[in-house]
Image (cartoon, rainbow, N blue to C red; front, side, top):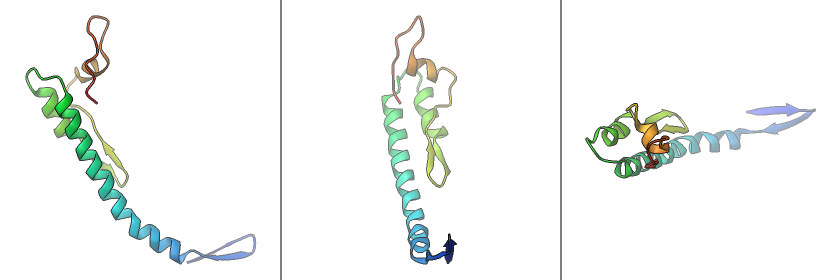
Length: 93
């Protein structure tokens, strides 16, 4: 494909091909690291019943080409991570 900018024609075919080849590789890398980070967060999560730990693995997922969301699925996870006025933080993320 070529584009004209201020009367100058630029052939972008090589760049277009490189971008198309990189996208699946980049997606695989984001997914690989997302899985590893969510697994590490689950290992570091405070363990009482195991609900917080299990919810991290169940709720974390690839949500677009370059975004992997890591989250917990319990309402008290944020309080474990950041603490409260009555409880010290126990960060796991």
